[in-house]
Amino acid sequence: MYPDYQNTPLEEPIENSPKERPFLNFLIDVLETLILSVVLFFLINALSARIKVDGSSMEPTLHNGEFILVSKVGYKLGEPERGDVVVFDFPRNITQEYIKRVIGLPGEHIRVDGGQVYVDGQPVTEPYIQAAPMYQGDWDVPEGMIFVLGDNRNNSSDSHNWGMVPMENLVGKALFIYWPPEYWGSVNQASTVSASD
Image (spheres, one colour):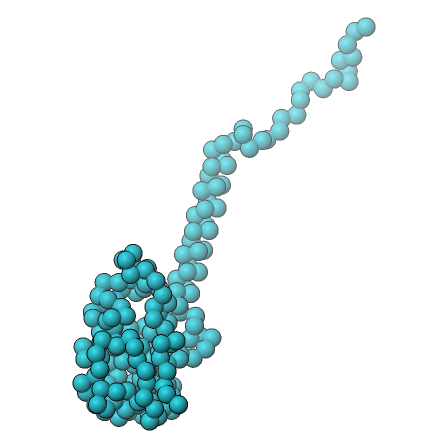
């Protein structure tokens, strides 16, 4: 007849629900987002670089002012291939980065004669060049080095002027043009280059 007060708890337990601590939950979300952003920033910078093209030496493939994404891991796992567009520290001033196309690999003989590039005596098909080179010469590529040329052959400071690029100077392989939007797309790679057999 009377309520049983002995078996009734005086207070209901208070649960700490997320709705009752909105500010603390907001701070935790912000902190998690910041930590994830910092981790992603360092991961992206460890694996890639963003480079601005300075000059016309790689036209028509790359244009002055374009921004490109460069993979830093490709040459840590493998060797460059003929036709790769690479970014490297300029051998005469390692504070400067250059971007050129790989033409000669270690142990190869490069000859430019009559507007044609030859690798080990075989002509190289180069649909990407601005115009045939007006210079000539012969170069042997030592081990641990590569021979690079700009696609705008007659307006490029490259291996035909100053020599080979040491492999350890390679920053990475140019992959993608991301700015300006009208040039957005893949950088012309090795599939366009072949030395005739």
